[in-house]
Structure formats: structure tokens, C-alpha cells
Length: 183
Image 1 (cartoon, rainbow, N blue to C red):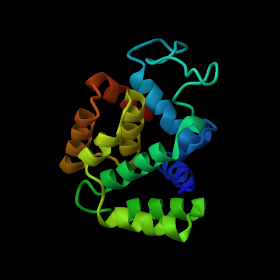
Image 2 (tube, rainbow, N blue to C red; image 1 turned 90 degrees about the vertical axis):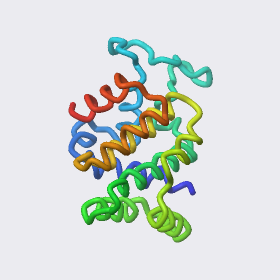
Image 3 (cartoon, rainbow, N blue to C red; image 1 turned 30 degrees about the horizontal axis):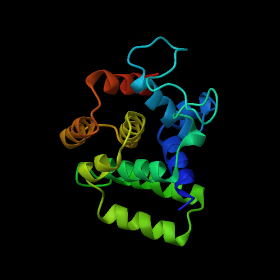
């Protein structure tokens, strides 16, 4: 499902539209930037993230928007749906953002059907965490979940805490995502 990156990009931009637009960033770049911040372990800006640069391209990091695989984008989209449903309901505002992102992305019928199934039966934290193989992917997944919701209910805050634990993200990494969202 090649359109998943476009849906994810549109959904993140709809959630953080002002931040993404003012920084001239797309949604995927914002998501990967938050993940980079989360894994920097307190390094001053300008230093390489934990894990270093990719050997495939000099200067490339696993956080570049173009480096996001379709599988990782699907994982991020699945956790955004799960996070939205964490309090037991996908409210009208969350549904409007999702519908707008789907419309903007041009998601085909098969993709819409897949998304409808996800909305009916969202993935569990364990299902998502089992597919995460690297700290970078874990940070992206957590950032995607956090972008999907304003944790204004106990269920949403519990969901995020449990997700961070399942992804082995420490409190500092979570705090850096929060700081990035507040910037």
C-alpha cells in the first residue's frame, strides 16, 4: 500500500499543521524529527543521533523522511489509529482529521478497506511493539501515537505510558518528544 506514506504525512500535518507549515516541513519530516530528538540522549544539537549515520548514504540517518519504509509508515499509521481509540471512541474531531488525510492522500479502495478494518479493530500495543526492531522505529512509533492524540483522558495517558514501556523508551526520550511537540 504505497499510499500509506501520503496518508501518514497528511494525518501528521493535519494534527500539527501550524508547526509543520511554519517550519516548511512535511508530516513525515516532523515525525522523523521528533524521533531524532527522542533518541539523542541529551546530545547537543548538531551531534549525530545515537546509532549514527547510515552506511547506505554518507550523511543520511535512519530518521530522514525518505528513509521511512512502507512497513514503518504502516506501523505508525496503525498506532495512530490505536491511540485515537485508546479512550474507547474515535471522536468526531479525530475522525474528521483522518477522513481529511485519506481524502488528501488519494487512498485507493483497497487502502480505504484496510483502514476501515483498522478502525473497527485497532492494533494492540503488543502487536505494534512486537514489530518494532530498532530504537529509531520505536521513537517514530511513539511520536506518531503522541501526535495522534491530546492525552486529555486517563485512558490516553495510560495508553502512552504503556506504549513507551512496550517500546523500551525511557522517561527522558518521552520527555524529549513532548518538548518537541511544545516547540
